[in-house]
Length: 393
Image (cartoon, rainbow, N blue to C red; front, side, top):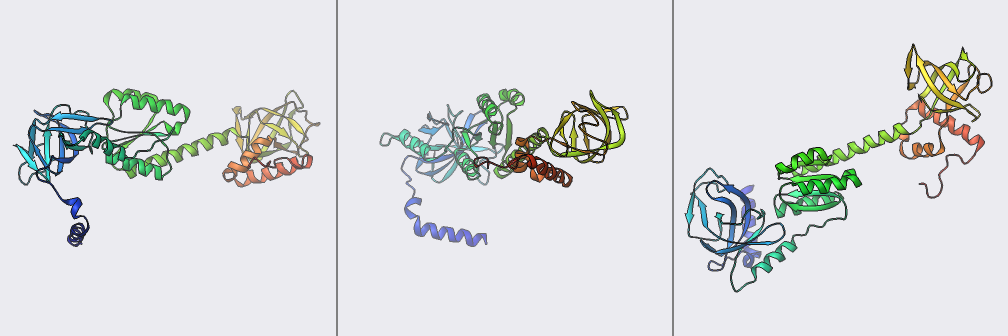
């Protein structure tokens, strides 16, 4: 099927793209930078595809760094030997005086350090304003950013545009999108963003490295780095991290909220009447924690749990089925409760609303039962207790 597909593409191109595919063998060269890398004995070089015109040794050319036009003079044009791969630096190259489109070449020249992969390449000539043309091409590569969001680094202009487009489709805000390795400034900016919103203290690094000088800052900043050469894997890892964070945050909130619970005063196990009242109890539903306020079946305040103990061990939380000795501040046995009574955790109305709206699916069956009983008790005194106002939904 591949042969047929190529044949179809060639036919369509010949039919509809003839003018766009014409080359001008005598015109100044036009090309695209594939890769920027350092070669032993040559310094920084660019691997390029020349797709139109002619390129000669000694020509002045214009390329792009992340923001501006870079002008330089060609020192050497190198072509790979026949049947060799131009990206394989171990293979030998042949120096040539000129190349005509279409050709894959390696260019050695000064001032190539900051040139970015994906940059257009043009030969400077008096007839055309090449610099303005390159700047227009750079503007055509649309990378929209937001006032806040995460940080994106990529290896080429094309891949940067593709990564940003994918993240935008996922409705992920982007504060900065640039070409090149992750540097100290990126880490500092992401660290500042993290202080405002931890999910924005993130760097997406596609097919780039972290500069050695930025590693220590990155490790100490708390900034989250997602790095790789497969963009879908990076975005999946990011989404998984965000979801994991949300679950952890929910758990943290849930732990801070007073949840429904009830327990029974075990008959014949009242050890002290008051200051504090001490009695044996058995948890019937939910989790009871030290410091919780208590109410009786009429909704009246009983006291606050001062401490809990089981076989000499002090406990801060107990669950359904556990039997412990409990000390209750402010309570008087025989007045505020009797043997066999059921006491309930006195849930603040605000906590009830949060449970009802955000965490109802996190409650187990016995907690649901206790919550319904607490709601019924509360509404005997206040029929509107726990109801949401118009602007609370």
